[in-house]
Amino acid sequence: MTVGTALRQGAKLLEDAAVAAPRLTAEVLLLHAVREAERSWLYAHPEDELSEIAWIHFGRYLHERLTGAPTQYITGKQEFYGRRFRVTRGVLIPRPETEHVVEAAIEARPMGRVLDVGTGSGAIAVTLRLETGCEVWASDISVKALGVARENARKNGAEVGFVAGDLLEPFADRSFDLVVSNPPYVPLKDREGLQREVKDHEPPEALFAGCDSAGREGMAFYERLIADARRVLRPEGRLVLELGYSSLEGVRAMLEPAWRDARVVEDLAGIPRVIAARLR
Image (cartoon, rainbow, N blue to C red):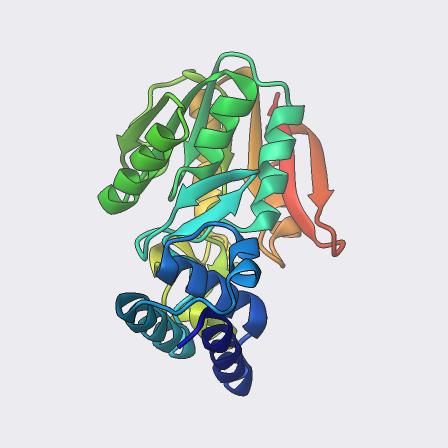
């Protein structure tokens, strides 16, 4: 089996199964199987024979993808803000949309201490440390996620402090200048409408949120986070949050009257993606 033939057959299998971007996915999986990094290698060596072990790995990766496993979990990596991060099934896969959170945090010109709540893979925390030079801390309730985040910090050369705990509970009053988070915000009722790659493979504790005290679905973490951020932020401290597709108005209401200068950032599709505000 040559490299070119394996690539064509893999892409055809994925296309017949209606997997998104079948050719690109086949390329990524085949590169992972042969332990090469550049796509150009595939097209420079189409007549090379695959080793038996590479063919076995490629077949296994194709099977995993055909059964719904995200490509990032198969390869164990995802790009974010121009850097490579390790991802496992215990952490949410960083999305390009979350880069808007990083950009909003940088625009807030953080000085002093920054906290990333619910850090997951550590993508936000590591990026902010490297882009701003600020002292950055990160928390997560999942010890497994913190292990992945620590590895990503080490591999990217970022000095970040990691703490296990539920949201802001481990932290002292008036201890930070900026709190940033991509919290769980998908309403439980929306679970069945999600892609199988998401609902069947990504950690539910990083995706789904229950109702807040007003009965609004998917808003429970926002309510707790916004309320407790007032305790840990110093005067004039900033809060930057990623938004769910229907959470803007609910979050905006939660920010009244203790917060000011609220600013909403839309993604490339025009969807409100981030809200940033300053503590009064």
